[in-house]
Image (cartoon, rainbow, N blue to C red; front, side):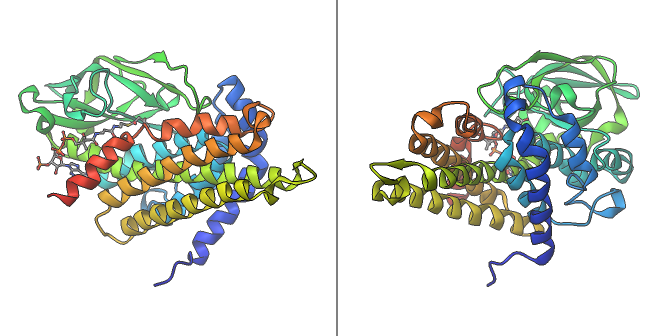
Length: 379
Ligand code: CAA
């Protein structure tokens, strides 16, 4: 057994770390304040091949692996969790299900523009009354000649306002519940598509999240992904990928917070000595380090299983649970260690703490992850 990363994965880490230092760290605080999406930075991320990372060159990908992509999400999220989730949704919840389940024609049509960053992806699943209970979704798709007519309202769509291409789920047979759900590729210019309410959020403020609305939205029938009735399973498989992405985001947030804390405690003096010399505080930081290391192992293992064709739903759930709980724990402790300074906006830790909270909620609450883990135990 070898826990070391491969050279090419280390290279990706070094490249993304340098990019993050130069391009993301300097703008992350301001983007949080204004709530504006750093589109130019995202385009640069795509230019250096980050969106293409885990996909085949046949569709414009970089022939890298999912683990390398996960490392990229981790590094970016250390500095800016908002860009971390935007990137993760684009890759894991839009490009990945197209890559895994779409027809050859659909892949050739949609993947090159997504992987080059020319277009941005989103995922429309959640509805006002169907969050955890995906099968309670009410959006419908009725075949009418060469088009499906979509009607419904999707909630909390990350990248909704900036997306060009969306994976959207709707019932083609209302009598069958989750087995009547189907998956569609929707383009933002399809008639009947519009953006609804923009969300005003506690954290990840620069990420753009909105309702997406479908009013007699005409979707060409060739944009059905898979067969009618396969939508629920496609959504679940996409979320298996997405949960590894969110886990990497949580890991990155936690690592970023610990780095900031280490810098601070080495220079901050109280009672005549640097505060890391106080055992109570050093032990808090040992716990932070240990939770990060646990999370990193689970996150990388889930990605490694995906890369090696091993079923990874449960590993993705464990990774998401551990890493996002670590993010909340570490950022809260970090704010505590910096005290009044940690609470103020002069330091990035209060932002990191606000950003961490959502990672325990989206792409399946951490209670859903426990349902997945325990469900597998008692199958
Ligand atoms: N892979 C493949 N198939 C799966 C699967 C998976 N990971 N999970 C479930 N299935 C299959 C089951 O095997 C079952 O198949 P059969 O009927 O053929 O046996 C079928 O799907 C139904 O499964 P369940 O009975 O387990 O489904 P359920 O209705 O009880 O729901 C759940 C289970 C785990 C609660 C699921 O609904 C779930 O994950 N909910 C959370 C949804 C979620 O993560 N939403 C986030 C949306 S995206 C977002 O956050 C916004 C954003 O933009 C970031």
